[in-house]
Image (cartoon, rainbow, N blue to C red; front, side):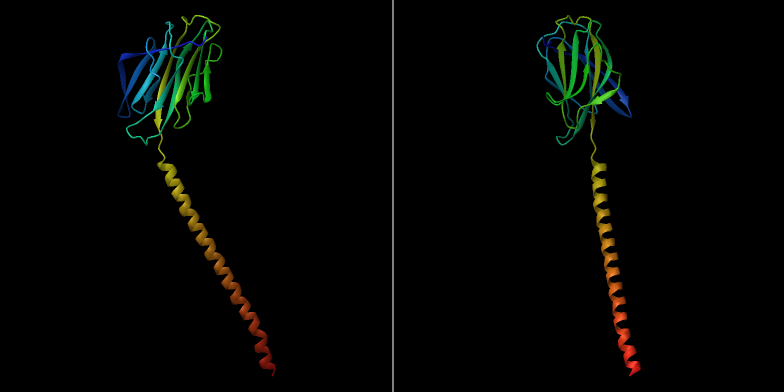
Length: 204
């Protein structure tokens, strides 16, 4: 049986300052409502949590990086804070894109360490919630932090430009060296051809 879930937006958010930037941390708990998709960025993070309450309705939720500009590109990531499932009654699957590549699957036997993992660049992060063996999930407790990193392609652009310029310079140098070698060879060949004529004139 596929367990549904809903999200209640807690009417407060936590803020903290990192390197001079204020980051809003919104807290979502499984409950009555179910927003299908939420936005995260460098200023907005989400705590996704559950404390064994009865849920119904939705079976998944997605998170998308979205900034002030439409052209901004993000990579959405997850950090596990904790995951406790003593009765082995739930499975949580994280995927990159809708029904896309599986990133991690959390169960009672594979809860992993608190390391960060991420969806592919520009892809939504999908979270699927499933019950196992028809058991009650009242003993399940977990919290995940959903973040997003803005991707900066400026270094890549400059690397490409530098590579192109370097390639042009290298080709120019190789062409100049080739022309110099050809001209030198022609000059040397011309001198060899004139020597017999001069010797013949002296003998006469």
